[in-house]
Image (cartoon, rainbow, N blue to C red; front, side):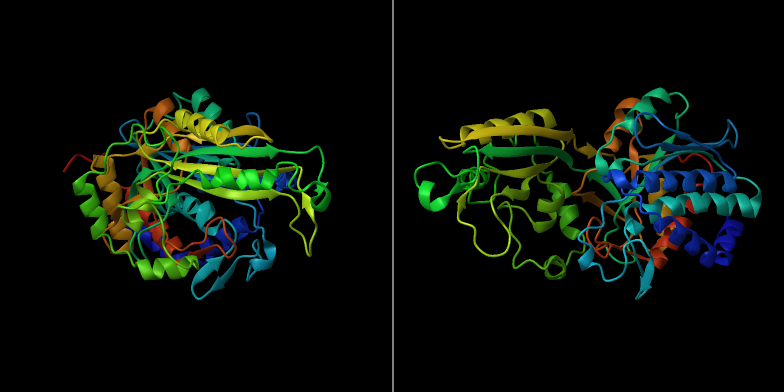
Length: 456
């Protein structure tokens, strides 16, 4: 192991250069005009895996390819499956970036680039950890299987078909996913719960065209006003979601878990400052940490319709709409929540307008036991790599493929939080501390060492 660590120290600059080359590829899966770039990122990973010493190829499916890699150490060795994604969020709005999104730049010890933290940096780090072992000792102590997809940020389904078709080939002892944040700078985390997701778009239809508000206003229903009333009905004054059946199936938060979450070092003032919001609000009876990780939410992601340009345009708009997503916790049925939300909107749609509902993707919440032998080994690897014990955390976001791995392969994910929070993933000026990149490589080096763990 010491040889692998020395190899890393001797190749720090070279590995950073490789990450920069990877980050320069604008692999935006949600935008079709970047298909060529996204495929270039897949080819970059395939070629890099081959250079490291893995067998690697591309699984095309019906969409963007999944990069499939494997290394055979022997039947007597444990097998790890590593998942990541090479696609990134769109960089817009471009005018808010302080440095070009696809020209990685180091500012105050942090890499600035789209995808640096989510998920190119951490996922490349695990491949480089394998290279450190192979270059330094001639072999890797574990069997390694790699599945890096290109549609995580756009909700594609290629990865699920890939898992179904490679069910036997992907058999493993543990699943490693480095796509969640740590607790604080210098403090990594093992995330044991993810919220699920429900998406829906509602469009309110009114007149057949935009109407002059002087000639028609007050005589026909206004879709924008109707939409506003419907949106307002979604929440009660105490912050609870006012949709019948929304909370069905949710067990109460365990007192012991609430106490553990309360002990996590969390600076509410710093959190508020980072958001730029004026105040912290949410469901009464819960802490900010619980609201953002352990309680379900219903959020309006965007509102459209009517005139929003410069100056005044006196109209009654023909239509208005909004995009809604709900974050779910264990116990909630995503399909049932989506239907309950649709029924609520229909019941609160005022007369005089029509309502069209488009149902988007759904994904259940996930909960993983943080005390399994492999989870304990992951925690030990994080502690050695960062020099600080990892926190056990819930994450408010969703990684839908985690449930696919569970249902198709029977694998629970080890969610490694290897980068400081505040990474601004999905936002302009995404950032990733350089030292967190090297710590993620060290985490992989420690995780790939030794025998199968036994329960302590």
